[in-house]
Amino acid sequence: MSILLIGYRGSGKSTIGRRLADRLWQSFVDTDELIVRKAGKSIREIWESSGEAHFRDLESDVLREACHLDDHVIALGGGAVLREENRKSIRSGTNKVIYLRCDPSVLHARIQGDASTAHSRPALTTAGGGLEEIVATLKAREPIYREVMTCELEVTHLSVDDAVVHIVKML
Image 1 (cartoon, rainbow, N blue to C red):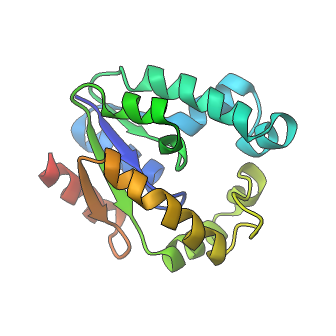
Image 2: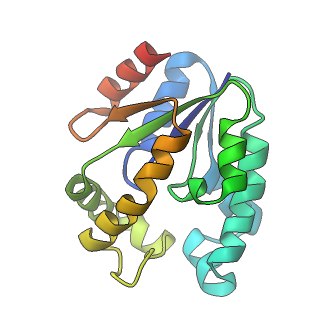
């Protein structure tokens, strides 16, 4: 069984995932990092040069492979749940799928506080990456996150270590 972490950008999937993998003595995989490695460019560069559809194709390929890994902690990109084929991959097998839910204003602050985000990640709507974009995107994605999740963890006010403890208890 692997543990898949889903949620919006800035929810802590990669940070919590790395710490959780260490705690469980498992390997950690970040599907966004796999996409960047496979394409040889940042996600922003993929979007700008080849478009969102090409990025989503790469994401589907990487996700399909990652979902077959055993005993891994896997952080999925925030939009990985958008395609039905990806949702099928996520739900396949005995993987535990944990939705890391976080308040939009906290997500916005975290994203703004990460200097690398602006250079490596594209805006998702014409709102340009601000709080309005987060609220609108979450409104569309949250029902999908809940459709594929095994359980949900509210991480708005949790430290990384506290989130890891809660996830371990959920297992």
